[in-house]
Length: 212
Image (cartoon, rainbow, N blue to C red; front, side, top):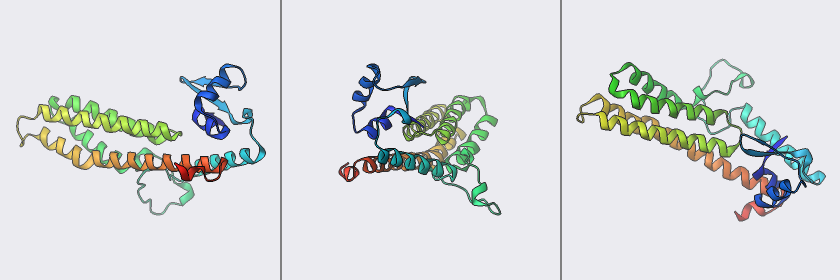
């Protein structure tokens, strides 16, 4: 199992700087992927109990991912077995609302093109966040999605001639129908990330998670 620098630091009870120093001095095997350090859990100098706790946390994370327990609002799928459900960005209510708006913008006049491009980036961010594994990556993708959607609002408002202009109406819909759902998704993921971090700390150092 590959661990990030932060996860390895938690497992070892050290700071990320200490783990990085250990890597640089050759005391711990690690490799870089996409500019990030990744450490094989088998190379960590852990006790058997710590290894078991680490494996249990990984199993729980995979199970949550498989069942769609990440912070998405899953639509009910009538007539399908729970185990046969597929994890998809299309289950995000934010994505559903955003895609409906994007299709309207793309079919509209050229004044909405820049906003459509920003909204596309927002939906792309939701998709990337949906399929990211590390909690920090999910949060970063959802933040980027929210920012891109906010840019789309500005493009539409700047293109609107008055409050009766279709561009103004689209901007209002983005602010009322799409952005709140993205913000709720982000808040849910941030809360889950904090809880997971406390749980990991508590598994290695009982009582530590309660102090955060």
